[in-house]
Length: 128
Image 1 (cartoon, rainbow, N blue to C red):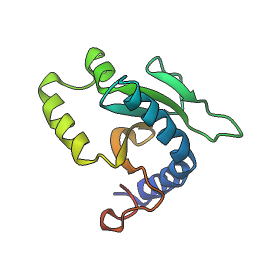
Image 2: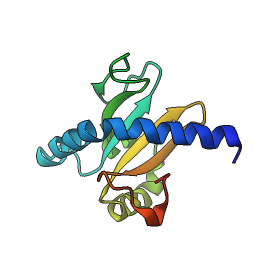
Image 3: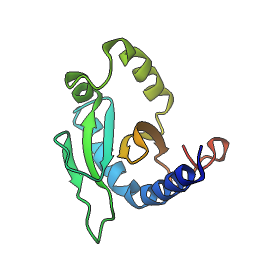
């Protein structure tokens, strides 16, 4: 991994800390109202026609816009191969104390499981 990529991940981790409370609230609503059993938060810095906007990038909120989505929406839009869905669901359940983030950045598009709690689990290191 290039030094520039590592720096981008560290910047992303700093940004994620600022959004943890809003993500917790949104995830609780999605689970309590049975919107989905698999909430996915999309982090992006461009226009996006997917999910429900929960935070829009601004001087006050930071450089990321965040949309709340779900595994079901990813399936409908064919963003996850149907054959991979059972594997994704298993992975999701193994990370039940994490947010599932789909991050669109200059590093590409990737899923990241990020801890819901303020204490970052040391066994995973800083880039969960």
